[in-house]
Amino acid sequence: MVDDLLELDIDGTASQQEYCVKESQGWAVGEAPRGLLYYYFKINEKGNISECNIITPTAQNLTALELACQKLMEQTSDQPERERKHLVEMLIRTFDPCITCSVH
Image: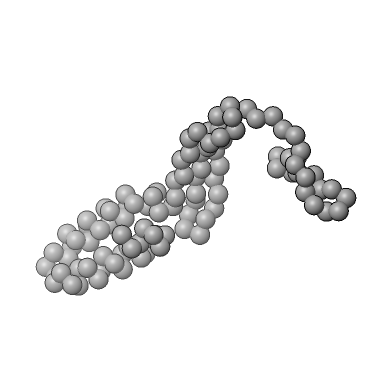
């Protein structure tokens, strides 16, 4: 589709082709280093994005991560707090969250 909008001029530069803007929506899935990345976009009649939803691999793993942390806390209740904190940090890294998510 994008190729239909662009056409190379004789000198090799791209020029924009005419197109008709209409209301529409679309979904996409792409592979990312941490898992699948889901996108949903809705475009209004002016060609602007009116809705957008992006579901990251980190967000998909949060429920499993939370359950694993709860289980780990139950299993290590007799250990010192410092050791438990270290184990939770190790567990979180096994889920390979994005950098922004891993520091919160």
